[in-house]
Image (cartoon, rainbow, N blue to C red; front, side, top):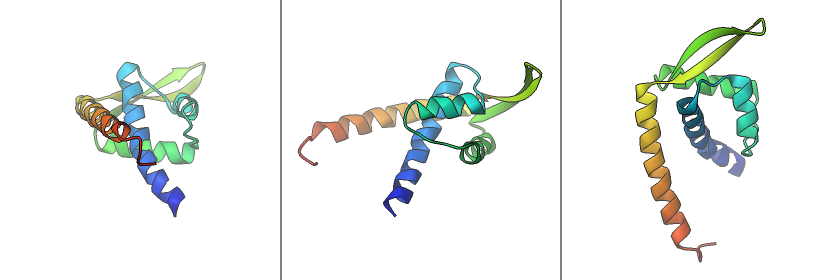
Length: 107
């Protein structure tokens, strides 16, 4: 039960992370899996690609196909809607960070 709750919570963090990196430069799945792993998120392609598909359908990202070293690769770019969502997420994350770190006696 607790793992399911944490997984759902972390899904939002992962989406913000994806938007952040897509705002920096075009991103692709294999790179994202490695990048997210470096932050403790162990995602398989079967988990990541549905997240990306959902973000595409929400118009947070766009997708472009390119050939790199003879292989077809999907690159994801942030959209204006994604930039707005990222800006709002950054504000909310900052506020949450300030609030949960001001009282150290909770735990």
